[in-house]
Each structure stands twice: as C-alpha cells, then as structure tokens.
Length: 380
Image (cartoon, rainbow, N blue to C red):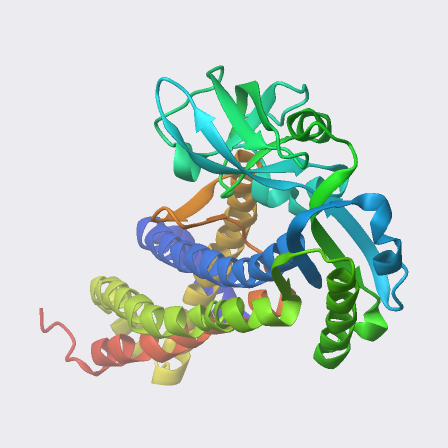
C-alpha cells in the first residue's frame, strides 16, 4: 500500500512525463480500437451486403407478372419473397450520357440496404420525379437539383422516357427511385424482373438451399421465363468470403506492428524519465530498498498511466464511432469498391486490447529501469 501511495505521489510530481505516457497509451488504445472494430465491422458488412442485395437466393430474369409467382412463394422452406425491378437505362443530359442501372426503392429493400444506400448528400427520393444517384459513377458530373432524362424499354417493348431531379447521392453502384416512379417508367404496376428470397432457418444449409434453388429453377423454366443470372448466399460467400476471413487477421497484423512500436516509445520515455530521476532512485537504494521494490514503484506508476490512457482511448474510440456513424463516412477504393466506415467491438476485443497494452508495458519497462539501477551513482 505504501508503494502505491509513493507511486501516486510520483505521478503528481512528474506531471509532464506522466501526461506523455498517458497520451502514448491513449493513441495505442485508439489505434487498436479502430483496427479491431473496423475488422469486425467490415466482416459483418460483407455478410450484410450479401444478404441485403442477394438474400439466400436471388434471380435476375426477364419481366414477369408478380401474381404468376404464387408457386415460388409457396415452396417449402421459403420465408420471404420480394419482387423488385432492376432496369438498365440510358441517362441523357447536356453534361453526360451513359448507361446506368436503376433500382426501385421498396420498404423491404430499404430495410435491408439502408446502411449501403444511405445518402451521403441530400435525401432519399420521395416523389415520382426524384432520383438518388450513385457517387461512384456520377462523381463530379451531377449535383443536387440537376435534372436529366432516363429512358428504358418497358415490359410492353415500348421506349419510355421520364425526367428526374437529383435529390440525393449515395455510395452504392445503383441509382434508386420510388416504386411509384418505377411503375411510371415501366408503364406497369404488375411487372418486375428481380426476385430476392430468404429461407427458413432449418433450410439454411448449402445442400438445402441448392435443392430449393433447383426446384425454383424448374418452376421458372416451366413458365418459360428467361433467367439472366442467379446466385445463392453460399456462392456469394465463396466469392467474397475471403474478406470475412482476411479482415479479422488485421488484429494480429496490427499487434505485430504496434508491439515493437509502442514498446520502443515506452522504453525510450521510461529511459529518459528514469535517467532524470536517477538521484531519486539511488536515494531509494541508499535507504536499503531492494531493486525489486524500486522497480515495483515505477511499475505502479506506469500501470496508473496505462489505465488512464486505456480508459481515455476507449472513451474517445466510442465517441469517434458515434460521430463517424452519424456522419455516414465511407471508405473508397477506386471506382469499384466502397463501404461505410464502422467499428464493432466486443468485450473480448476490449480485453485483448488491455492485455496487449499491459504485456507491452511489462516487457519493455524493465530494461531501461535496470540499466539506471545498475549504473554508478553520481556518474553524471
């Protein structure tokens, strides 16, 4: 108890060096918070992305009447079926003319995809002449309030053109309009060309989903409906699953990088700090204190500083997490890959961060202290 009191008084006496060490531990904790949190979040983002856009099974087909899909909905194991429209359109304006992919924004896909299509500027479309455009392809070409024309071929094989006003910009690869607007563009409330299916939990094995997909394939072929593309959650996981496994590995990589980095900074500061306090340390030794007791006092000081830095680092980490999520910040890699910046941390991650900081502390603090203790008094 006496050693703890001495250590606490020393912290107050050496405010500047204590503050520097607190900042070092704070920055290390904050860095680990975001690396661990980002790795966890991105692994979950990949899974959410797959389920959001593709579900357990999805089909892109030629146009079909929704009422004709009753036997698909009635398939054993099917939990939900969502009929949507995904249309290839020609966008024409004085600024730019190009082909874009337009999707309808339904309550169902808005619930599934809200974090991926959330506008980074403006808002979601509400009226039939409003559109949410993708920043990846439209960056620098269109601004909020701009107008352009979109043309497509309807299910009745008639070219239809509508004018739209940009009310929002998102980071997904697709443009979005309301269901009412899509009805006008397709000149039909009945026809759709995309099926998003989820299955019951008991049917979520690869074999069960493959068997269910084969059954639905036969139904669609029996209706002479052309399947342009189809996929299952397991096929998508085979394609993107490496990201789920790769991102958590960043924890190990970051700890390998930070261990010598944090250790070198801590060791250097402890060396300078103890060298300046060598008179105090030698005085303890002259009073008959053993090396172990002197090292324990300095260790207590560093433990207090580490705990303060960890607490502040975690506080700033969670605070920055809230700010980043509310700001809807995205990370972009070229023109093909963008995802929301998020951080998800569990208790095991927090424990691992604390353990890492203390292992770094205990490994790196002893050499400089022992060097000062072993040096000759008044050798300066």
